[in-house]
Structure formats: structure tokens, C-alpha cells
Amino acid sequence: MSQTLDRAGRPIFFPPWLETDERGVIRAIPDSHLPALAERVAPDQLFPFIRRLINSTSHRRREARWADVNRQRLALARLCLDRAMTEAICEAEA
Image 1 (cartoon, rainbow, N blue to C red):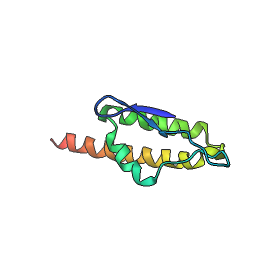
Image 2 (image 1 turned 30 degrees about the vertical axis):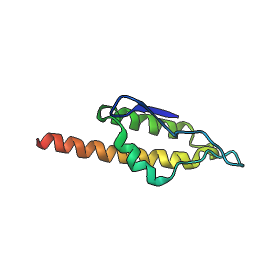
Image 3 (image 1 turned 90 degrees about the vertical axis):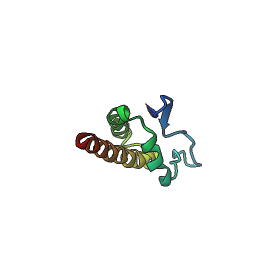
Image 4 (image 1 turned 180 degrees about the vertical axis):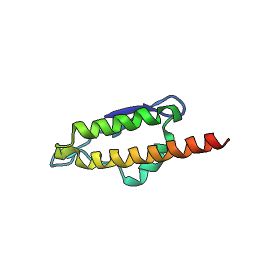
């Protein structure tokens, strides 16, 4: 489970639960929730959170039960990176 802080300083966990299905596979959240989750991350926490997401994926890459969550971790890392780059560009122009 990867943790970060939202804009108000409250913790955010990904994945938010460790529910499993009948085969023991960790249930992923709906993909449609990922963009909103990336927007909730505090700006100063984007890069550390990206690192934690990627490291978590790397540690569990051979565990089939984490496959869906790992895919989402990478997608969420990309969304956070896109957001960080956009915000950095906007700040540089200001």
C-alpha cells in the first residue's frame, strides 16, 4: 500500500483497500477514479508518491494477485507525473 498526503494534509492510500476476490486477487478500484485521485495529491507530494508507486510495483511485479493494482499504480504514477509537469510549466511561465 502506498501512502501520500492530500492537499489538506490528510493521508491517501493506494490501493484504498486490500479486498480480494474468490481467487485471492486484490480488487482494483475503477479506472475512472484514478484522475480524481491524482488531483487530490498535494503538489509537494507528487514526486515522492510517484516514486512509491513505482517501487511498490517493482516489489510485487511477479505476484499475480497484485497484477491489476500494479497496472493501476503505473497509470496513477503517469497521471501524477503529467500533473507535476503541467504545474511546473505553469509556474515557470508565471
